[in-house]
Image (cartoon, rainbow, N blue to C red; front, side):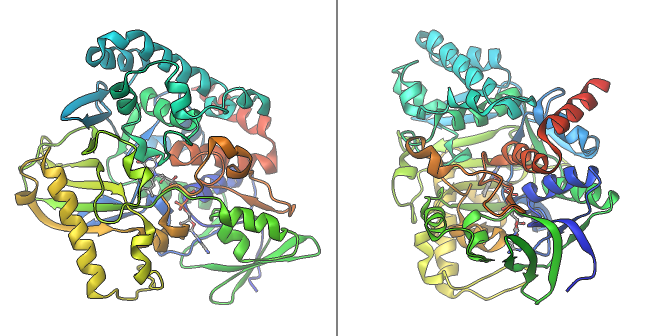
Length: 506
Ligand SMILES: Cc1cc2nc3c(=O)[nH]c(=O)nc-3n(C[C@H](O)[C@H](O)[C@H](O)COP(=O)(O)OP(=O)(O)OC[C@H]3O[C@@H](n4cnc5c(N)ncnc54)[C@H](O)[C@@H]3O)c2cc1C
């Protein structure tokens, strides 16, 4: 048993755990964050190939312009000034390539509408109606706009699916496909994904789109510094395996090394299913555990990371979503084992010669089930089991498949490769402890919102959740949820007022 008693222990130093901890530390709470990995950050981990820095997940983030929500929150936390960010091209944050045509999605609502209308001149009205609905839906989410509101507000706009709503604005299938062309950002499918999920994410990038100049891990490190400056602790290599309840409240958590840590309250940044699996308590009913365990997950992914020869491939200051199929949703409707049809392509700028890319990453959907034969093996930097030749061959074949596919739009890709490696669904499962390596955790279903959305609070009064499974995933979504979790301790109006006051003083 550790001697220090904390006010709050947070399990997991992902973005959710770290933002929650930073907010609570600033409120004078003595916080401890326990992270299982050697590197903090969860999906914000960066790593090297050929001495170049790659993102494990996060390639871009939105709503970071002066006055926007993430700007306000990160500025309040004191980390904004130190974040090294680069704005993506104003007239194109995402390029959707479909049917051998290229469509640009631009930053700024007016520019977004103008740019799209050039490709679809007859859909001018539909595009404006779509954008108005995006703005309308987003305005019903109070915290997304850093204001206080009521739960009823959201109820008015959450009940429609992407396809059901979008078809009210346009019947032009190509336009609908383009609007859904970056669905890798939410891994939904057009029938079940609520329109609001699409709207919150698309809108954040329309507001402003940014990438990290020196790796997303910098965000995790800055948050850790805030926690430590305010007297908190962040311990790495501490995997929690047991959460012990007695007399109606959590008494302690225990790590795989058998060390127990105690606090007044506990917050899990893990997937709720995993949290409940390690929770020793009868207070969470079997039916609840079963329901959570059965809630469908978003698909997993495969990411090829390629270090490039110098001066070969032009740097694009935007991302590309390239679809080989006419249906941008097809990979979400079928098992993707070794033949993905949609690809997200992300460019890293060469500092020495900025018109060229030093590296690129290719992301696609990939089903966890394809990895069943290696499911029992585990591989991280702290715990490493070698996977057999077959796994390496499978990985290499899929990397080559992706490269061949993308060669259609980047012709000299193959001959420009210096070194490459890939993250598979098993990599994501092992490094993030996400069930089945799922991209974004629970899959929100518009027809079953009550069973696919979860609260920050649990039946146990001193056990809470934070992170991507609650409310919304992504850097913006997880940061907003962290605010909600922190508010469980200090009050939401108080915290939101403080953040807004800080913003107005500048
Ligand atoms: C491939 C991919 C690409 C993405 N791209 C983008 C993007 O471009 N832009 C964007 O905004 N979002 C993106 N996202 C989504 C975004 O990264 C996530 O929604 C967000 O980072 C999740 O943060 P989190 O804190 O909820 O979870 P995580 O980052 O998963 O953090 C959970 C943490 O808990 C730790 N943990 C788990 N179990 C234990 C345990 N038992 N004991 C101790 N610690 C434990 C994990 O090691 C991890 O550090 C992407 C995600 C993926 C997977």
